Amino acid sequence: MYNEEQQKVIERLNEFIVTQPSQNAAAEVLGISAAILTQLRQGTYKGDTKKYLTKLANYFQLKADFDGTYREIAYAETSISKKVYDTIRICHVKGGLAIFAGDAGIGKTKAAQKYVADNPDNAIYLTLNPCLTSIKSTLKLLANALNAPTASTLDDMWVNIIGKLSDGMVLIFDEAQHLPIKTIETLRSFSDYFRDRNQTLGIMFIGNNETVRRLGSNKKADFAQISNRTKQTRLCTTKNIKREDIMLLFPILAQNKMNAEIDFLWKIAQTQQALRGAVNLFSNAYDNERYDLQGLVAMAKHMELDLTGLDIKSLKSKEAAA
Image 1 (cartoon, rainbow, N blue to C red):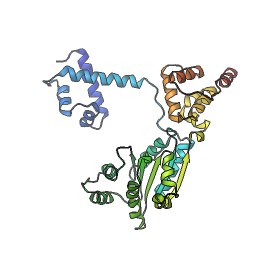
Image 2: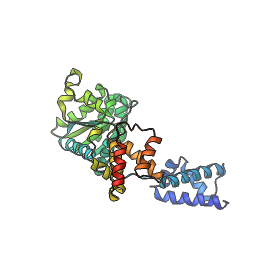
Image 3: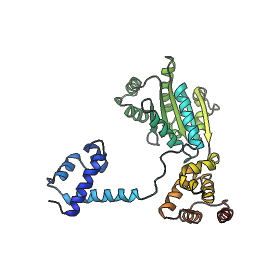
Image 4: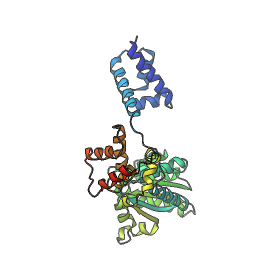
């Protein structure tokens, strides 16, 4: 039998499971086996019940605390995210290779994820990292995304992937600056396979400025073929972020005509902090229940952001005038 507090945890567990695709899916999220969850719900578990109920209680409290914090909007069609989205679309329609590169935190990843959400049947999004850049690891990553069988040999894995790809698809590789030339050539071969059959497969590389230097330059012989087959290359920096982008990302500021705050976050976004840094700053200030200009500046200093070059006095004067 459960006491009153324990019963509340079980009730929250039952409510949580209803929100998930299945109890197995809930178990994966919670890190507790489905079998143990069943026994806990039935009150028949013979093991350390307190251990699991405490774990569940801590999890639900953590999520409750999270729900009370600032939640950034899922996607805003900023000037840069629209360019990323449109570049992917052209790559998708025409096939072949395309590159979009720029500073970290300007909205590239969210735009790519939005594109895949809008085109779930024929767009695949993959995030690379230094551990997933070799031909074998990248092919495994792609095979898993396509539900293709993985194999011990590269040629078998390549064939398995081809069997899952089809005309009119686009593959989006984020953090592409990590890719070495051999892996890039392997990915290019998938696009070439469809091109030779008068079909299209788009390969979209998204990354930092190094991506353009390595993939888009025809000065190096090793990358000449890649450059020649790249149909478009686009580059954006934090300096391309517009004031209107800040208004889209922070509608609460736009609705209340908090122009000094908008300008401050715009200046922050144009530094190495980028849009991501501006969002993090506003999120912390909002949770601190002080997101006016003084609150934003105080939080920026608390976060040890570099405010060099920002004319805060001018912004304060604008705030006072308003």
